[in-house]
Length: 511
Image (cartoon, rainbow, N blue to C red; front, side, top):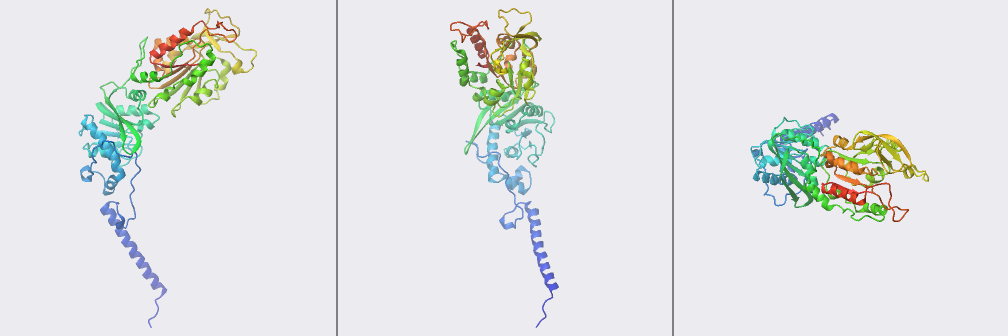
C-alpha cells in the first residue's frame, strides 16, 4: 500500500488548480477586452456587460423616412462597445426620429452637409449621431456631463465653450423648456451662431401664438422661418419644431423711446383677447355684488396660453393695502402660475400696512403712492369709527396733488406722502421679455395713471391687468342716489376698459 499524501501536498495541488482556473478566466477576459472592446455575448464568459442608457425620447416620427443603417466604419467613431450601444433597439428608435427630422431640414435648405453643427442639451448624443448618419460629419453635442465621443464639450449651457460665430446650425432640444434662465441660454446660442445661420428648437411648448411669440422674443436678432408639430406614433407626447435664422448685426432689441407708443397687436394678443370674458356693458344696479361675482367669469391668461420662455415672472399690486387684501388671499392662492415663481411688488402709501410686509418673504414693498410724476401729495383716509378692525374699518386712501381743488370734503385724516412716476418705474423695472401681471385699485387715480402708461408706452409691458374702476355708483343707503365720492361715470370706466383691450391689453374688471 502506498503511503497517504501529506496534507501539505494536497493543499499545493488545490492551490495550483485554483491558480490555473483563475488564469484561464483572466486570459479570456483580456481576450474579450482586446478583441471586442468590452462588449460580449453570453458565450464569451461575460464578466462585464453594457446596458443601453435610458431613452430621452420614445417612438418614431410619424411618416418618417426609413431607418438609416448603422455602419460604424462610415461614421468613424468609437469602439466596438460604443457601436454596439448605438445599434441597440432603443437607441435606433430615437436616432431614427432625429434623422427623419434633420433630413427634412436638409431638403428645405436649413441644413447642409458642409455645415458645422452644435446640439445643445444633448446628454446622450442621439442628435449628433443622427447628423453624422445623414451625412453631416462636423457635429458635436454639449451637455453638463461629457459623453465622448458624441458629446465632447461638457459644461454649463449658460457658458458654451466655443468662440463667437462658430456654428452654421444649432439644434436645441428641450433645454429651453426646463431652464429657469432661458434668456441666458438664448444669448449663448446667439453668440455662437454665425450670421445667417439656422437655429432649430424642439419644445413641448409654443403650441399657441402667445407662447410662440415669447419663444421668438428670446432671439430678437432672429426671424422665425418655420414652425411645425411633430407627433409620435406610439406616444402621447408631441413636440414642436421652430426654425429661426440669425440676421446680420440685429441681435439687440432697442427699448421703446417714443413719447407716445401704441402696443403692436400681434396674433398672440388677438388670440387671447378673443378668448377673454366680455366687459359688462350695462351699468350694474348692484355693482358690489355684480363685480364680485364677475371674478368667476375671468379667463386668466395662463388658462388661455402657455406662459413659458419668459425671463422673469412679476406681479405688481398697485394699492395693495394689507398683505391679505389681494396678495395672500387671491394672487398666491388662486392665480394660475403654471409652476413659475413670481416676484411680487406691493405698492401702498398707507403707513398702517407697512409693518407687516417686513415679515413677508418674496414681497418687495414700495411705501409710496403710484402717481404720474415724482412729487409730494396729500393722502386722505376716511375711517369708519364704528369698526375697530384695522383692515375692514380703515377707509381707502385717496391721493391728490397738494393745493389741488376738489369738491369732496375730507372726513378723515390727511397727511403728506411721496408720490412717484409709476410709468417710469415700470419701464425701469420690467422688460418685454418678462411676464407682468398687475392689479390696480387706486381709488379713482386710474384715470390719471392709465393715460400716463399709454403716453410712455409702459402699458405695452403689462401682460394682464386687473383694474377696479371707480365711478359715482348707486349708494347702498339711498336708492336712486349716487355717491359724490367720485366724479367719473360708468360710461367713462367702460371707455377706459375698451381702450385697453383695443390696444391689446388683457384687462379684467376688478371689484
